[in-house]
Image (cartoon, rainbow, N blue to C red; front, side):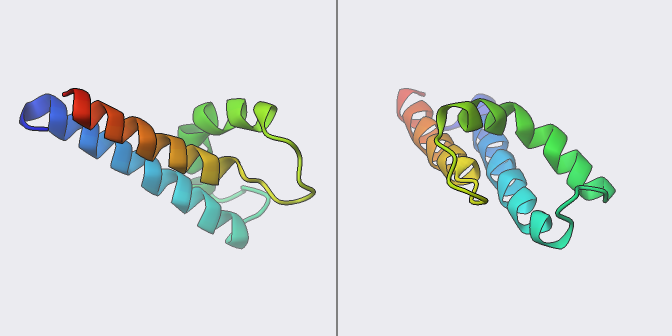
Length: 84
């Protein structure tokens, strides 16, 4: 993938992956989400994670939506890379 569009897509997917990972890690430090960093990461990642939570079965206190979202983002990124 070359050019501006390819670079933009690469950066966008990487930012989303790191935002989801950051949200998971910060949730161990700030489970209530009171820190500003937690709020920003929640605002960025919630549009992706909320629909997945509706589809995935509940597993007690374990939330698998970030893992599934990261896998789906990687899959979508690979597909877009092949198309472009």
